[in-house]
Amino acid sequence: MTIDKTAIRDAATVIVLRDRLNDPHVLMGQRGAQAAFMPNKFVFPGGAVDKADADVPLATQMPHVCRDRLLEDTERDLTHALSVAAIRELWEETGLILGQRGAWDGTPPEDWVSFAATGHVPSAHPLQFVFRAITPPGRPRRFDARFFMIDADEIASDLDDFDAACDELSHLQWIPLPKVREFDLPFITEVVLAEVAKRAHDLTPPDSVPFFKNNEEANLFLRLKGVGPMTGQKR
Image (cartoon, rainbow, N blue to C red):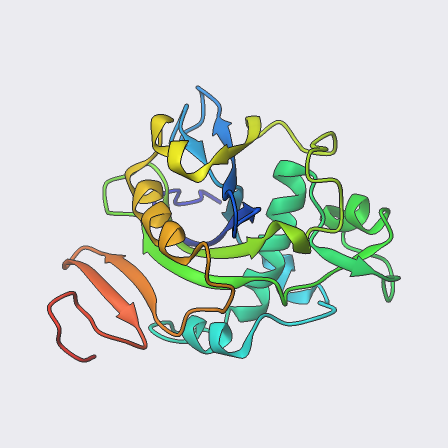
């Protein structure tokens, strides 16, 4: 069966902030030169939701307000699958553990065997939903990406140990927030970073989430549960 690679896939992206109150740094890595999507660009860890993500148990759930925002402007409840995908992608691409000590109930799925071997179960309570963006038409890959911000203090492993990471991202590093725009970034990453900078010193999950809704009919900049489009009109 031929897979339509231009079809929109749900995705989760993770923004990890370190020392956010005093000297904020953000974790980023560089995509490979041969990557079909955003080659050579510095990006946050993240990727598409897998079918099996919906069945992976979570020790804790993300904040209620974030779950409410994720249910807006969508036909399916992907809250659980997106939470799992965010934790899985963070582990796969950086080797960092977002979880708590505990034993798995049953045999973990293949993608989670190495995570489970660390003695942790995935926990979603640190995830804060802060941005959503759909890739514009005409790109080689299209994603409906939800961006989740977490405090690095919630990570259960050594923040400077990336030995367990796969090779999808290279040059993994903690970049000072004021210097991150010196790197080669995708446009949407620059937009998201502006939101991150505004929220760096705010530890509470946002009640209103920006949403770049790019589709064949129009390109809209909305807010989930707030003011949008950016004209002052109430949704």
